[in-house]
Every structure is written in C-alpha cells, then in structure tokens.
Image 1 (cartoon, rainbow, N blue to C red):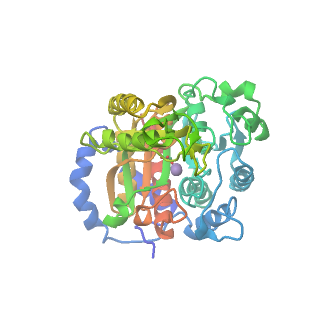
Image 2 (spheres, rainbow, N blue to C red):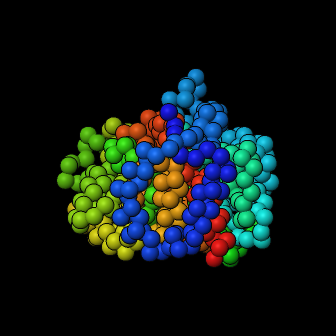
Image 3 (tube, rainbow, N blue to C red):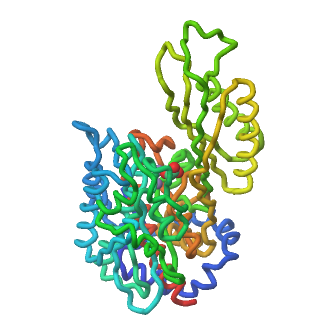
Length: 468
Ligand code: GLV
Ligand code: MN
Ligand code: MN
C-alpha cells in the first residue's frame, strides 16, 4: 500500500509554511547536512502517514495505453515496445499524449524540433519550471524508460488541478523528441535543439528508408527552416526536473524507492568502418586475406580493453556490426560498427578514445585493413543542482520515503537542459536493473511514489526560486 504523511494540497502548503525558510534550508551547502539527516529520515518514516496527491491508478492507466503505440503485433504490455523517435508509431503516440495534456488543461504547443510543451500559467511573471521526459524508445525497448517521467509529469498537473494548487511560476510539461536517437545517430535530439547544441547538418541525416530528419519534421507538422527557433531563450528556465527509472539495479537491490541524481554521464558516439577486400573463402590463403570482420572483431575487444585499462565507472560498447557482403563463402570486405563511450568526466572519455584510436591503427597494420571512424555526437556530462537535489530529498522525506544520492549511467535530456538552468532528476527503482529491454519493469507503487516526489519537489521549488 502507498502511504505518506500528508494528504491534501493544504497539507503541502502547511508543510511549505512550516519549512518556509527554504532558501536557507535548500542551499548549495545543504548536501552535507542532508547526508547527516539521512538516518533521521528513516526514523521519521514511522510517523503519521496518509495518502498521495497523485493518483497511481490513473497514472498506470495512461502508461498502459501509451504502451499500445509500437507494441509488437499480437503482443501484450510485457512484450515491450518499438517506438523510435521519428516514426509512425511515435507520431500516433504524440497525438495521444497531446490529448492528455489538453484534457489536463494545458496549453499545448510544438516547437520546430517537434518538442511538445504543455503550459499551466503561474500567478507571477516568473521563469518556467519545466519537467517531463521522452516517449520514444529503443528498438525492442520497455514501457518505462521515458514514459514514466512523461506520464508522471502529466499526472502531476492533473493532481494539482484536483487539489486546487496554484503556483507562482508557470509550469510546463515537456515531451522531448527522439531522445534515443536510434535512426539518426543523435540522441537527446529535441533537448539538444532546445539548448542550441545540435551539430551542423544534422537535419540532413537519413534513416533506413532514406528519409531525412528535415523530412520527418515536416511530417510532424514543422518547418525545418525555422529549426533554430527551437532554442529556448536565455532566462527561460527557473528549473528543469525529470522523473525517470534508474535503469540500473542499485535502488532495487537496496529497496530504496527514490534516487536523487547527482550527475549524468557524458556520451560520445562514433561510427567506424573497417575496409578490407572481398575474396573467395575457399581459395584465398589465410595469410593473404584482408578480412574486415576479423579486424572489426579485434577492434571490439580493443575497445573493451582500453575502457577497462583505468579504474572508474566508465563504460564502452560496440552495439552492432553490419557485415558486407555477408556470405559464408566470402571474406568480408566491409564492417560498420559503432563505438559508444560514457563517463561523468568528459576528459576521461577523450583520453580513452585516443587510446582506442592508437589500438585501431595497430589492428590496421596487423590485418591489412583500413579502419576509419567518424564522430557522430558528443553529449557532455552534467551535474545536477545542489539546491534542487536538496528539494528532492526534502520532498521524499516529507512523504516518508527513503532516498539515495546516485549518479546516472544513462543519458537524459536533463543533461542538455543543464546548459540553460539548474536541473534535477528523480529516479525510481528498475526491477533487476534491466532497461532498454522488454523486460524493463518498475513497480506501479514506486512509479506513483516517484510522481508524488516530483509533485512535492515542484511545489518546494516554486517557493524556493520565487523567494530568491
Ligand atoms: C538513453 O537512453 C541512453 O542511451 O542512455
Ligand atoms: Mn533510453
Ligand atoms: Mn530515457
């Protein structure tokens, strides 16, 4: 059963009043104080408990409905979803989500990058508190990555309407376009556009059907010529918040419902090509081959070795290989493979990449094959804002929930928003730490708790930032 300590909007107002000197409580130096407070949080959990402001059943219903867009033919919720950014499935899901936004009283607009914003007016002329996530998925993905934060954000608005809550800041729910970046080698697409961070020429990148991003933007009702206008103006953001599943196994293992994200990893993407020579597999002697696949295989292991060569949490992945001509009896002539590197330290990513390139040069000599790599994208790591972290802890604590500070190994649109203003992220547990898989699952109660913490954090920030 879901229980917290206060029920009504009035309850939250009282809570805010009781802790009205938030600017001193939520301060940059408060992280240490929060760490010291943590054991006390556990003790307080036993105090008076009541129900949530958000409606978990209503939130679940919208997540289940959303899961139908891109569900495998004849499948069920547990079979996951393929709803790639810039696809027909995504387009249909966006219509559903915009309908939910309008029904919640939000004023909906779509920017030239396809990002969907739903606005709820504030009572004062202040910058926006923006919160949301993405509804696109990876191929054969799950129904929680991005969806929880998107549907959770809309549920927060519905709950505020229901409880008659007004905020001083305008609130905007955002659904970012193409977070996963599968087709076009550019993840965090919409948030990058909003932060003015997209690489030159990206609109001309094409998917497997030969359609460019510009073509897709037109299909999404946008004019690519106006693309630069997607950049949010200076001073637009009071704060950006994102609720998301952890996608790792820490919270689930520790049985802690709320993660307070400290920082988000940087992600570099490269596409590499190994080029050898196609020849007869029966007649070409082993010492005379220019086998692109053998070279690529060595390259995969070199990536792993160089990533592991220094201590830390950095990761590196080669996620696929496309082999040509791709026949049993032909020595492979060409292999395309990506390299992805992630860490909280951008300099470390660069250092590892330089070592990998030196290893590739060595493999070229050993295998008599050319290896060439293009840098596709580089999304910088970002730290969350200490004051927002503290507000999230305070929100969790007020709901009687345990929380844990932790880094994010997954990329998030929040990291692009960090260029425009202070950001914070709320994690909830992922069962077994599984994500980017149909087996991805988060407990429905935990989803409701995450949305509740988002609700309370927004109200705390509304007080905190207005008091500045
Ligand atoms: C985004 O989902 C990522 O790949 O981390
Ligand atoms: Mn993802
Ligand atoms: Mn995500």
